[in-house]
Amino acid sequence: MFTTTAALYLAVALAAGLAAVLLRLPPLIGFLATGFALSAAGVAELPVIEEAADLGVTLLLFTIGLKLDLRTLLRKEVWLTNAVHMVVSTAIGVGFVGLIASFGLGMLTGTGAGTWAVIGFALSFASTVFVVKVLDDRSDSTALYGRIAIGVLIMQDIAAVVFLSIAEGTAPSPWAVALVALIPGTWLLRRAWDRIEPPELQVLFGLFAALVPGYVLFEAVGLKGDLGALVMGVLLASHSRASDLSHRLLSVKDLLLVAFFVNIGLGGVPTLEHLAIAGLLLLLLPLQTVMYVGLLWWTGMRHRTSWLTALSMANYSEFGLIVAVTGASVGLISEEWLTVLAVAVACSFVVSAVLNRKGAVIAEWFAARMPRQDPSKLHPDDRPIDVGDAEVVVLGMGRVGRAALLRLHDEHGLEALGVEHDAVRVEVLRDEGLEVVQADATDSDFWGRVVRSGEVRLAVLAMPFHHSNLEALELLRNSGFAGSVAAIARYEHDVDELRAHGANTVFHLYGSAGIALADAGAEDLAES
Image (cartoon, rainbow, N blue to C red; front, top):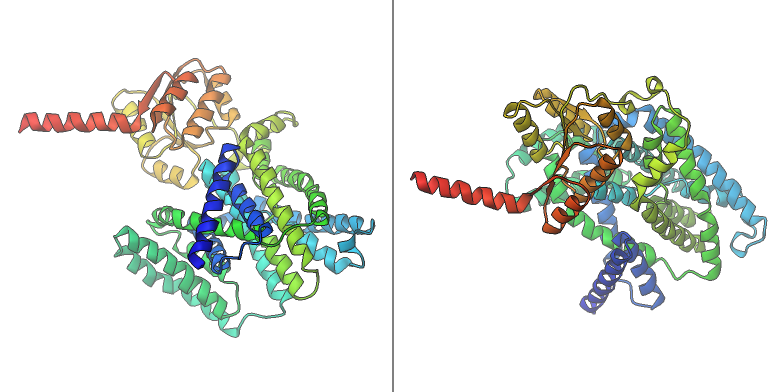
């Protein structure tokens, strides 16, 4: 019976995920629809799906920790934005729900400020799962706006943990102070990690670190296990293999997060009243989005950065559902609200997915219509970049971009400048003596500065994602750049698309590597 039910869940999730992709929506929208469809059809709930969903969130937080620089949380644009937004958003939510209650809707009849406060607080969160997926799909988790978004999300998650502890009336165990021993204890984990080579053992090590010293240990002393997974990720983040481990856990995490989204939809079949109230709650999203923009502008961010961050967080959160479950368990809200909020969260994901599909374009449109900012008053990390006397700019400083930069400079004598959005990688490359600036290649402001420099004659698009290279190429040509453009591509159809959009030279990564390999082999054979 279990196997049959599991097979049905997989078949429906696959079909719905494919349908979402065909509609140019993220597959997670299909997974949400899967839960609602299975619930409406009366299909028995899969026994392990809730545990798999919880494990997916745990691994998500662990991998976030592996990429997190704690200094990010201490930055004004993170902690101040989160604190003010959460307080004001909760207050607005309370007032809005109170206004709806004044019309005498059935679910809100007889409710008071306590119920409204729980709902308002639950709606003040943005979705960690959704935002990280958006950033990962764009390869923007280390971009400036991505780092701000993740920092704010982590602060929100911490606020949720505090609320859960207070609402449940359970204080952490006195033994919780012993968790500081994890700091020196991590040294032992690092030494063990240094000796682990096989990929499958690396994955097992990551699961162990997230679940045993992370989740289980924190739960044992009365703290949320998810917080423990995040802390363990942070403690291991400085290890040289942290990025590789995060990549290896990606497929496991993504599979488990399918269960998370399906599980949201399994919360119950919504009635017309549930749908109506959820629809009204969605009216708060534009206001919350604009609040993020205003707060980030206040802290010195450029309009484009503010809008990209705000659009990525224009959704409601799974942690809001956890807050609601806790509120229902202590009698602050009725069980019906869990279904309403699940529908609101699911619909917000659809809205956010549509917006973020063209997030950079939308951010550019709004930014262009806002008052001009004085560059000297902008945040140091978000000020205009001087490309100097560079004749060549190389976009994307991974292995391909780094090799191209060195070749252009050392062999061809060209003044070459690397452009990379990952702050950590920029620091490493600068330490190696390379000329690299931190910037976003999909930022039209940057391309405008490249054109105005008057020196750049060649742009090399070496980013690992085709859509990023394509978007940068389109912005480059639209900005009036008349120089040559060289790009890399993984697949034949990508080669054709880049050439159609104005690339002069396209290097087929796999095909060209095969030719180079054959030539090297033949030369070696001739010499032997």
